[in-house]
Amino acid sequence: LTAGHCLTAGRGERPFAAADITFRPARTPGFPRPNAVRGAVIAVHPIWGFGVGPKGLRVAFDLGVLKLAEKVPIDVAKPLGFADLPQVQERVLIAGYGGGRGEVARQRRCQVIEANHAVVGLGCPVDFGESGSPIMRLQKGLPVILGVLSNKGIIDGQPVGFGPVTQTGVD
Image 1 (cartoon, rainbow, N blue to C red):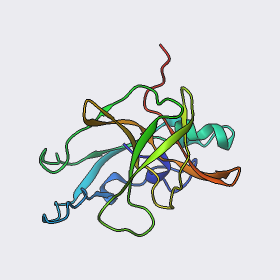
Image 2: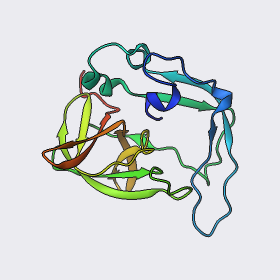
Image 3: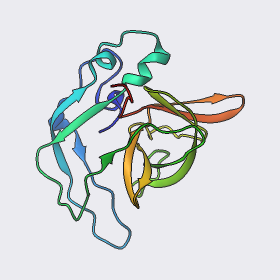
Image 4: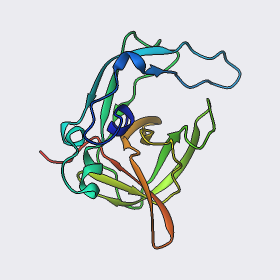
């Protein structure tokens, strides 16, 4: 799971060829780097893929999935579940690789400043290259995914990040 724009050359553009994308699991300090895995199939949310609608609304559809050509061993990367909608004032977790940090993710907590059935707004700085990073909460001691980072900005002088949520809360 990632941001749709990470899998395309731009809004309204076709996705990259899946075989041209390589997934490199994060390196755990003190352990050898896991083997990279090539992509097999890409899917981008159709509303994002067509590039329709006002830019602010498209963030809610900036989702994409890269299916891998082979399984990543469970001891290298454990699958994560999905969480219910984030709540305003909740502190969530972000793990991103942007800003030139290379192989080890920058993990931090951010406060939810806005949340609805489509988008979450976070009151923290987001670096270029962090798009597609998971937005998570701890649930029963395990991380679960709330959404992914898509965009960044500044509101009233405060750096903020935005991303689509993975659960809509709509029945």
